[in-house]
Image 1 (spheres, rainbow, N blue to C red):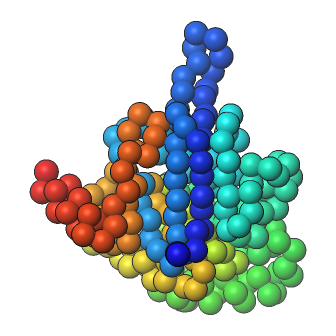
Image 2: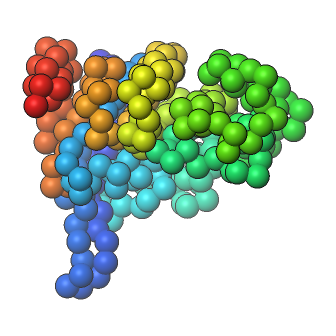
Length: 242
């Protein structure tokens, strides 16, 4: 049996109250395993980003249970969830979310500093990660001096610097050209192969489907299908031809 990195059962999440209440997740079930790159796909408004936020512990669900890396985060307090995220989850966003006034080295150091590491130790590890994503020698530059693809590499270095077991990505390639997007996916695919790690990506970008070990389809607030093996090959073939 494959080790589960994430397990979610009957997750419900709504927004608004009364007549304005909207159900974003309608009893969604989800499972991702260690050692895989897992994509969540589906039409706009189907609940992908809401599910991703619940799985990451950045959004509290109304009902259901979510376990991440063996910890039932739906049973934790807000402070406990925050500490758990800092220690175990790395985040990569479509818009990079780099701090413009900080250097690349300082941006990548942030997760380690939040964990209590000393500045010298944090910056040494940050420099190693920047070198691994091909940005050695640019540590003192600001994000505004980089291309979009280079900024996304910095975001990947920041997400991985504290060696999280779960890496969560929201549309990491949709703002990038095809060549740069594939370079980013090569980095994320390599990260997913680390022992005990899982990379989870929400995407609208069919160009990256081929990197997936597993794809979950969502529609109307639920996971409606999960593809792996031969099913995955058939799904990718159909999706990239349409």
